[in-house]
Image (cartoon, rainbow, N blue to C red):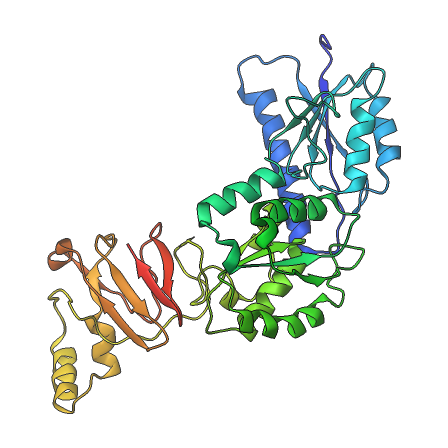
Length: 390
């Protein structure tokens, strides 16, 4: 222990990037580490020793790992008392080298990996290549197996899109895991080559534009993607534009989490669009369907002018825009307790309201611009953008 001196924790991770989404995640990671340090030092009852946090940046591609590791090793004694290195994120060969160096010192430094998922940077029950390494995330092999079981993947209906790079442990181990899951029945993968800097777009967008048509014609149900998030974003954008009327289940590794803050992802190809296949939470991003009045709607109090407009429109054989907006009403804040179906491609909307909607104060719910109450999960149930809300 460090006695009255604070114990130092090194946050080791790339802290420079030209990618805006990665910059946002770096900021959040540092903020989270600071909040944890502040809580330990100020909110936990009489916790000793106090925690001191230092930031260790090996560069955007971790190429400066050796210089940084040597500085961290020099901090293990007084007055710094470095006790652990945390925050290891990218599964690259440089990351593997820096973790190996820290855990094979004469006095090894414990390492806690944040989001490293490569199978090559892991200890097993039978092998300990990195003594003192603790991981938070599971390996790519475990992720691929879990995805296959969850999605009930049929190898005859699956296609693989993979990066040809061999110097990125995340990509190579993800390809190996996918190949193991699909077995001998795996079709010839669709390949592309990403730029050396994984945060750069390069020319892969042009590569995907050429390959998407072949993927559409093959009509796979499942697409395994073995690549980094920048190329995943480009692929999803190209797939959504090239095959707007088809539905795919895209399976990939944890690098897809970067897409949550990637502003270049086309919202029409992301969760919340008519072509999405994964669950989401409302409100929905992107354009929303314009809908006709609900089939079963609760009686509500409307202004006489609105009623007159609706009656006049019915006599003409159609519903006026004013009547359409006023007819879509329900109590403010009431949850959707029964099924509600939206069919955007047909420009129609059918809703069945809960019984509780037949009484109480009402507020307008325009189907063309209002999503279900927050927390209502939805899934795509057919092509052309059919959605169901529980």
